[in-house]
Length: 161
Image (cartoon, rainbow, N blue to C red; front, side, top):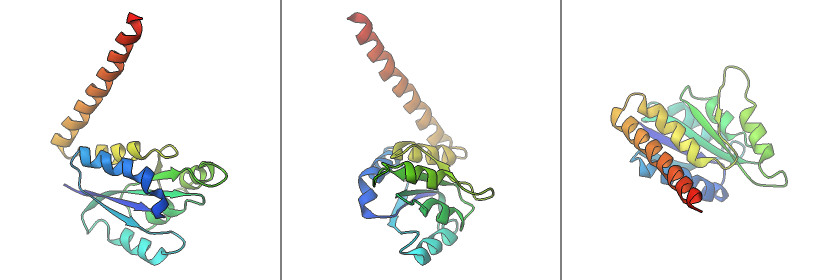
């Protein structure tokens, strides 16, 4: 199975990124985590991106706050799918990161989830891998059914009142 690369711009992003890690673990999807900054370690970020496919990655999650150029910098150097997580930080509470992540020029796509949307970033990557992995697709189907049942159970509890 291909692995998922998780790149964060700073260790302060770890509380949010941990949710993506936990989601990947729950689906038994291999992953590798790095801290690379688009601005402070651009050479290392580029090197990772350029070599990601040959190093067995199937998709990359890039999490960053404020200027949030990381996902775009990663996407500029690979044709693997890149999913950006804008991190809530600074005075603008993640709006700046959201706009920096989602406003990519034509030809360099970055899929962008909600501010601090690490679980959805991981699930989107899992869905990409599940295109070619029936077992993984079955686990996704089972999660959807379980999630729906949780909502229905809550509905029953409300109706009883």
